[in-house]
Structure formats: structure tokens, C-alpha cells
Image (cartoon, rainbow, N blue to C red; front, side, top):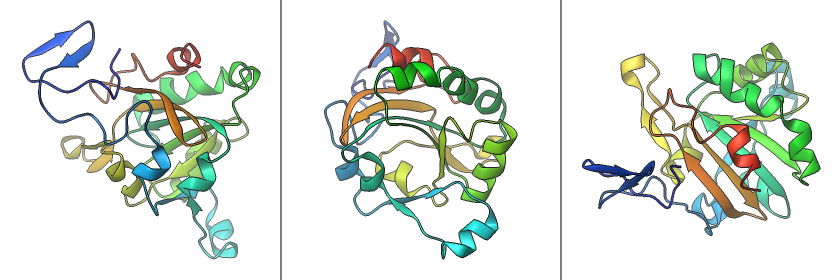
Length: 196
């Protein structure tokens, strides 16, 4: 399985893991602190425009999302896109009771989208009651973690890699990154459930 401990290589793949000497997938790895990797970064909880106005466009500091909690977070290229809508989010929505049974406080979906798009998408998927959705409108969270991907060829611009992590009190216990944004081999709910 691809993990953030693995490194990319243009030459070989061994047992599903990238090998060789190139950049790491991300600036955070298993055992690392996700809050320290994204200092001062905030996300935007999915909400309607009116909720945004009434909250004075409040954001949620990353430390408030992770500190003192057991969190499963998954990132994906974008709201309303194929694999994200048809497979990735449903894999978590359909397994929410299994996450709760394992003591998970929050299951979070994050994408490089604004919080209003994330809200409409969550409502469309009927997943808002099970999963917390956050926008990373300027990609600052994903840039901090080095989990961005240029998807301009698909007219999406800078987006998130497809990934998942299990985080306890800010410490990354498991981390998985797909080799391609269209893959759903290592970042779905079934894989991360087996890592908790």
C-alpha cells in the first residue's frame, strides 16, 4: 500500500510502494504531528452562504480539529467529481458505524474547494450527518502537507491528492496516498478501518 513513508521513484515500484530517491509524498508522515506540519492553517467547515455571513466567515484552526481527538480524515481532488462522488465519500458514509464503534470522534472529508460548494455536495450525497466536510479554499492545508496535485489537464487546477489518515491527538498513526487521483486502492474506508 502506498503510504507517506514511501518515496516516489521514476524507476521502480515494489509491492505497491514507491521506492527510490525522490521527494516524499508529503511533509507529514506516520508518527508526525499534522498540526505542526500545518502551523497557523485553518479550514472552512461546509456551510451555506447565509451561515458563512452569520459566522463572519469564521474558519476552524487545524489544531481544533485534531487536538485531543481520534480523527479519520480523507482528502480528495474535488467536490462533484466522479470517483470522489461515486466511490470515495460513499465508502466512508456506508461505514460510519464501524468508525464510531472503534472510538473515532470525527470522520472528515477535505478538498480544495470553498465551503459552500462542499456544503452543497455533502447535502447532495446525503452524507452531512455522517461526515464533517471542510473546504481548503486556497489549498493552504494541502500545501503545508505537500499533498497537492496539479490537475490542470482536467480543468481543475491545483487540487488535493487522494489520501486518507488516522490521527490521534494530532499524531498521524496511519497515512495512505493514492498513486493516481483516479485510483481508490488505499484511501477508502475499508483500508483505514483496518489500520485503526
